[in-house]
Image (cartoon, rainbow, N blue to C red; front, side, top):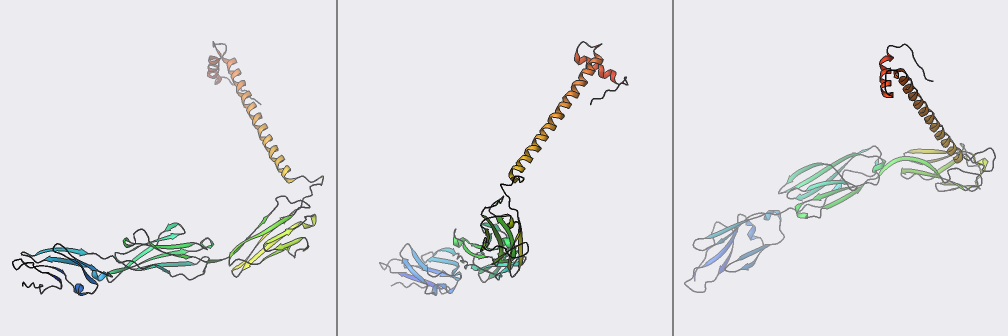
Length: 356
């Protein structure tokens, strides 16, 4: 029986292949690595034949990275080596550094952090769907890396409800990056505008004013007033939420209407001046018709001015041509030559012509 010994200088996984006859040479494979890794119970022999020796390593970790050697102990010994590279999968990112809510005008900092990546992960920021640039910082932690990206911004009311997304990309994640999103909440003072349902209010019409207010927190409720006081006719002037409805307009409704809205950051107001037109009054012209008539009058006036100016221009040039032709006609065979001759003699003459 042949005895095969594992080289004492290596940590080995040895497989003895029994010789079929006493004349054969004992052959065995040895996997070695310059670490105690092969003593790990995570390493399992998968296949052992005359042509192949296969091992598997379960629950792989960064410590398994290194050079592995397979030796065939024949005469001479045959050896092949392979280097195992282990990718460190990054942890899912988190966004810190921001406390809700922010106030309009505040400068805030968003920090996205991911650790455990090898090689270092890449971080990208998005404001809704548009990419923005952050400041990147990479620190080594053992065999892996911790990556941070910082985004600084001064917020205003347009940032309220905006989603900032941190996306972590790494070769181990293929085309499915890790993402985390933070939706900003920005508090700001109210802003108020008034919209109206009818452009030209007339007597008897149904008329509505709406107090359009923006703010965070949302300013509730809104307050309506007329000419600095309370609404005078609560039976016809109905307030529902942000709307003021006047059921049947009349001349007594003329005046300045104001709505106000408040939150803990301030108060905002807007005004609307109401003038009710009487369509049956003989001396009162429809504002639309008056506007159209004014525009038509301006167009007609400009057209007449252009016609007069063009007529004077043509008459002036025609008179000059006839005068020059007359001056040079004595010595010229045609009108063009007459004009040239006349211009040559013009300097010697003191006669001046004026055209009105």
